[in-house]
Length: 520
Image 1: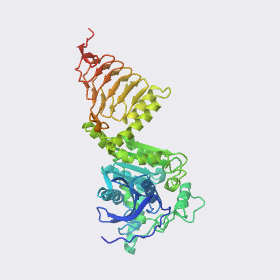
Image 2: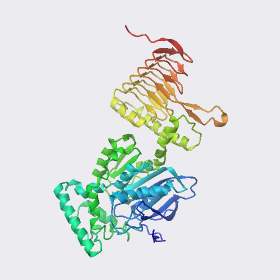
Image 3: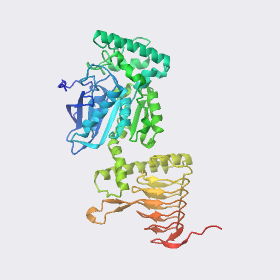
Image 4: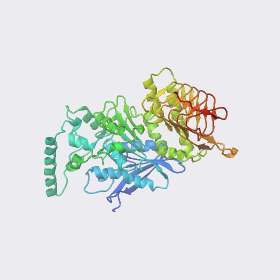
């Protein structure tokens, strides 16, 4: 592969941070195209870092918005790369200035290839962030690449949809698409004969008086000192005209509902493009893992506000919190799998840090649940937020209720939890259908190490409560206990071993009292 020529000077449209180290790197994709990127990492960083690959907007370069996001995230503890997509900026690929839904999606996975093999990166904690059209490419990459543990799409475009249907789906018809295909293929003939590829022009300049507001917004970014860059397609002569052609029949987000990893969509309330994120979120919400998908709509923000406007980019609120949590979110599935295997959580370890993060989230949700009156519907919604999954039909809860995890509570249908209950559920609390949990019941799923030197370690063991179980007030269920279907635990009992189905137990420790009596 030919060696790329990259400028040695800082030529970004944003100032260099004194909190990060910056260097230029290259990596290649599966098509043999060498890609250029800026690497940012926190100064004096120690150990393996979570990493995020960033690109976009569509027609921009890494010296613009994507680099700004990458640098800011590096300040928050991530190793980041902002890369130029194939055929653009300082990256390789010929002919120049051509877009491809396939190759440009591949570019994100190629970035993951690089990060996965970087000795400074924790390969299990790699995410991607795409801006504008590369937000859609990022979601597309997440569909097919499970190494991507979290995805963030900022002010996203679905380039397939807008290419095929026009803005706001105003040209969504076979006639309109066939007319466009004819025009583009005529352009192909012209370009081939000429031996060059005609470009479509970047953002219109000078700006027509009757230009739509979003075009004015693009002009204000790409054509002024605010965002202009000499290598930016939108700032200059734009993409090859025929770049639109492959997007017309490319199902970019067809399988978005199958993404299992976390996805965060961020969009402006007043953005002309909001419908792309809204409809993508509907796909994600109807998919296999709706509990880890989120749409964050920023009040008052336009499409381009989220390129660089600190007045609207919620750095210090939801966006930064959510993106900064990606490192933790990336580990959560692995963390709960570890707990489900019964593995020791060593105090101070990465797993222990994840446990703390999850606990803080649970404390916040429970505090909201226990503050004032909530309707049954509101309590169900809060329990869904706490557990991270949909709540089965017939669930009922009388607060207050407390959990120090929440994400490992598994509820059956028509179960009832009375007031004052406390669940320590890291090890897993599994409650069957029609179970009744009385006042002030404590369910514990963690033991501590007995050796004082390891007293901070925790040992998980799940509690399984069968169908039609009744647990009386003030009972305590200890780690590793299974309570069989139809059993009754008497008030005040401390249960430290399994309870057979259809039996009554009580006392401290709980012992067999009698068989459950059936009504004649």
